[in-house]
Image (cartoon, rainbow, N blue to C red):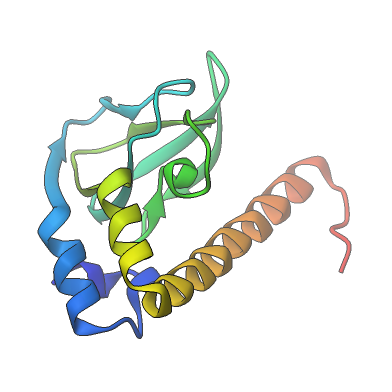
Length: 148
C-alpha cells in the first residue's frame, strides 16, 4: 500500500486508508514533464512513489525544493484552501506518483473527523519540516544565519 510509505498517513485508521486508496490514481510521468504549473487549478495533491520532482517558483523558475523521498507529498495547495498551485512541479527523471483528487479527499476528511484531525496535524508537521529545510537551504546559499 503506497499510502503507508508517506508519513502523512501514519497512524490513520484502516477504513480511512482504504477509502483514500480507492480515490488515488497511480500516474507515470516522463523526465522533463510538468505535473502541474504555477497558477493552474489546484485539484489534486500528490505522493511520490518513484522518481524525483523539482518544485519551482516563478518563470523561468528557481528550484526551491527537490522531492526525492518515496512517500513525499507535494501539491498541497489543494488541501490548504488555495484555488491554484503557487509553485510548479517538474519531473527531473521518470517518475510515478499517486494523484489524489482534492474534492474526494475533502469528503473523506469531513466524514471522518477524528482521522481528519490526525491527517491535518501530520500535514502541518510535514509542511513545517519542509519549510525548515528550505530556510536552511536558502540561508546556506545566502550565508545568513537561521534564527532558532
